[in-house]
Image (tube, rainbow, N blue to C red):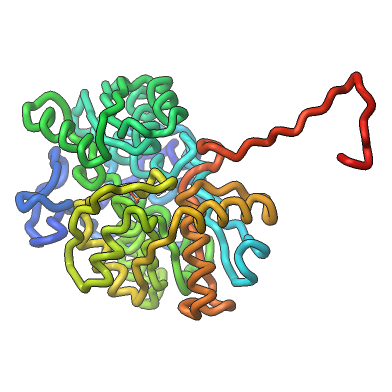
Length: 408
Ligand SMILES: *Cc1c(COP(=O)(O)O)cnc(C)c1O
């Protein structure tokens, strides 16, 4: 494992850039949001990457996340704390997928059981490289768990704030992995306000979604990986469960970088940003033709990972969705739970509710003809279904009594 961490590799970051104004920022310095309060994007000398990394060389490497090192921001190999960031498989779901040509990218196999590991392994490495010793974060669960794991592993102190109804298993996992974790009587953006206040007082570094530049770079590897797995082509459509949108924004960036390297062409998948109808700020903004999304009041859904009432990268999500010819779509909790149930029972793949949301949205898109049966589609299942509550299985057998074998 981690064969790609045994050698130092050159890095190609030139600078950072405000995603809204294009203003330039120095690399190798600690940054949060840009001066206009928007996410910073990392820029690379892609011509130099092209000269240093022939595709054949990339293909000869082990398939973990670190094979992409030349397209990642970490300069020093010893900044990296790894828990084994493997390439995640693409799993067909022929039965629950409604007969369509659909694959699930199962991100639940990553360390800490979710794709938050991709973003946090990168952000923590950069924090370490830039001398950060204390980090705070608001989370619906999975991001906090990944942060706690990687930061504790390298001795960075972490304080994590979750909405009070965050599933017990997530809160305990965060605590178990060495963070100080607090439940807060509010939603994730209320937790974010506490983190922001402490950061402004200089108490810690703010690790909220998109408020530091490097989680996008980690999440970008989903797009890089997908292209490599599909033989340097991209699917016709991607369904992505969208909270803060880091992954969607990251993949969109990855595709551009791959095109500039000459590894893929100019075709892009239609990007479907999937939200729960109980918390669908991006869907509303998409439908109203807005560039930014207003806060969603009274957010509620079983899919906690996408219960994000307000996203600082809203315009980046909306831009990518529109440029791609995709849509932002909402699905209700009953459809989400039915999709999870159906996929587990008939295809043997246990999705998380957020993954269930992408399957529900895909099935609806098949039904309305938005997506064609033979189009190649990738759904993202972003966490292991094992972290979420499951329906009771109450059967019980008394081994001392008579057993009615016919009834089993
Ligand atoms: C965080 C999370 C999401 C949303 O990811 P973003 O890239 O922040 O939109 C979706 N599903 C799960 C399971 C998550 O933990």
